[in-house]
Amino acid sequence: MSDLTFSEPQSHIDHFDRLPDSILLLIFNSIGDVKALGRCCVVSRRFHSLVPQVDNVVVRVDCVISDDDSPSSSLSAPAISCSSDKSRNPFSNLFRFFFGGIVKPLQLFTQFLSPKRPALASSASSALLLSEDSDAEHGGGGGGGVTHHSPTQVLKNFNEIRFLRIELPGGELGIEDGVLLKWRADFGSTLDDCVILGASAVFRSPAYAAADAAACGTATGTGEDNGIIPESFYTNGGLKLRVVWTISSLIAASARHYLLQPIISEHKTLDNLVLTDADGQGVLCMNREQLEELRVKPLSASSASKRTQVPALNMRLWYAPHLELPDGMVLKGATLVAIRPSDQSVPAMSKKEVSDVSWVSTAFEEPYGTAAKMLVKRRTYCLEMNSF
Image 1 (cartoon, one colour):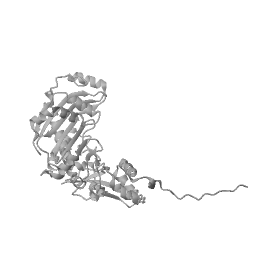
Image 2 (image 1 turned 45 degrees about the vertical axis):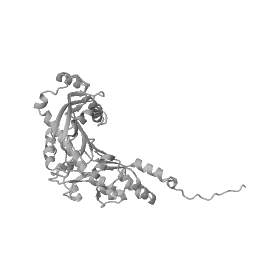
Image 3 (image 1 turned 90 degrees about the vertical axis):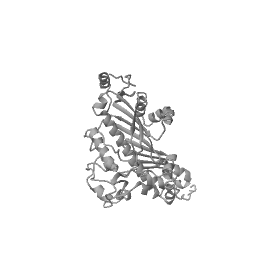
Image 4 (image 1 turned 135 degrees about the horizontal axis):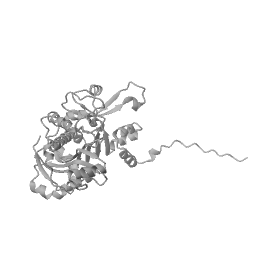
């Protein structure tokens, strides 16, 4: 009978312990989501010590409430849906946002709460909140409720954030289905520039596009008309609607910028900050130089409400009654607005003409980037707007 050899049982090996900190941080930076990183913190002491060193963080905001109400009372009160106004005429809806926004612009943020809620009566300012279901997180059976934290509170334990992306649950501007409205704004201590792309209708119907182009006397593609805005644009409310789109987008952007102050002040290591929304309606961007400018030069707050004051502006507008993109998407009443503060000298603006077109045409992802590139080839109209 042969001898049997028994080996000593191997002790349990934690393979994560064999990974260097640099690899774990690479993994945590790939995760990004602040809630997932919070869960990683409770796995081990090592994870708990490494997570605060993450430099790429994504914060998805669950709701935005009025500061006049406590989180519990606001969330238990009747709420509205981001799509609750979709059945309304887009012009009347944005018109309401414009005049309501001039008095208390941050009332726009109450649109985010949750489905099937009527608008809050008033709001002096708003707060961003992330919710956490206590039972879901800890495996409880009930009665735990929901805990809410602001992004400032959630991020306070991160020491080395360089890239921060905050995503709101939806865009501030309620628009009708089929209407396009997108904006991108860059801020320092105040507005540096803003691009707005809008269309009264968006559809994919080649047959209808051809018929509509023939009826309008315009060609598809870049549009081979003379580029002059038709008289009907001024008489049927088209221009007024574009003004409302512009002012509403600027109010939304300046309100977002105001809410970022505490985060920017606390996190000195930031290189890039983006505040966007799940609908892809608006994007606010700040690079390292702009972030530092805000820390050194305090922003000018609007006397009307909790938002950054919008300076006097020079605007350039491009318009096409009918714009068909290469992928078959058709924009009816396509409008592009490029905005910069008017304190930039006219000679400086002229010298930057080429780069301006590049900046405007690269403001949006495809297919909207292509639409912007096509529009800037058309006739340019210049406008001015006072500070508000």
